[in-house]
Image (cartoon, rainbow, N blue to C red):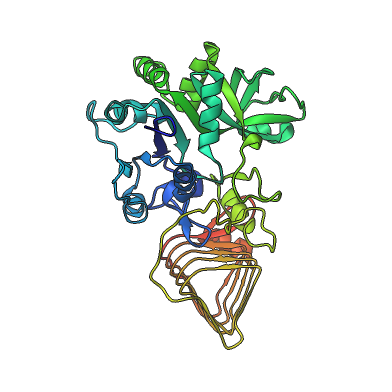
Length: 404
């Protein structure tokens, strides 16, 4: 007998992630490395698995090889109890076409639902950094009797114009779902904050299937979950909001409770890394009661030699810092910083090499980037802008495998 409702997890991981270029030049956005030991998709998968949901389909499309490989190598399961975490590429089951939107991705993958026959379906995005217990949201959904429940995070009303916004009544029923409105609505209990959609949904299965099929038959639809499916439920008074602040995660602290970041831009991606490096981080990677699971690398421990130091930094396995100074930075596995080099406020992905006497400041270096001896990044921004990607916030980003 099941101790909890029969839930199928669907993770939408097919987006191109154009605003994260060049990090998405040859990989899907959910496969972008994050936090020294993870990829972005590890956060949603960790949340689902920690909540006891281990029947998960990851819908992929663009540049999905590294994402597929990561899921297969990191998130394999024995299947002894019927559990599985599997990437599902676009299969063109309904004709020779790719997914035309997130709702169409589910429509073209309807066999996953009919095969599993779940009572409820959680549809989550794949590229946010956060901790959440989805089972509490499912419980709230069941208790409300809604067809769909949308996770909402409270953001200052003055900043909410950048998000999909939820207007709800005191019971939690969604009355309007607004995409990036110029005048965001307040919440029923606080006019100065707005519910922003987190892109996480819980559906009663029959309601989702009916809505997806109706949307597929609508030639005027963009076939988008947030833009088309959720508003359709709102018009029927069948959508409710789940307040993210009510979610209680074991081991969380007051400082990182309710943390959620959409890392869809280079500046947001950079800022989320800087949230990790303080003594009392805004987002704590070291919560053993709700672990974020990532790739296990067969590398020796990090090593600091000849006076090499790292302060207020995350340093991955296999790193060697030799007579160099690292501060306020995140170093992934197998990074080498040579004599006299300075790395400040930067994000270095696996395999990066920083040569002797080089300076790297406020930069993101993708996998296997080499910074030559005496070179500088983030010092002369005008020169860097001519050679590399530069965010609006002045973060220099060097693409995979480039030698500076």
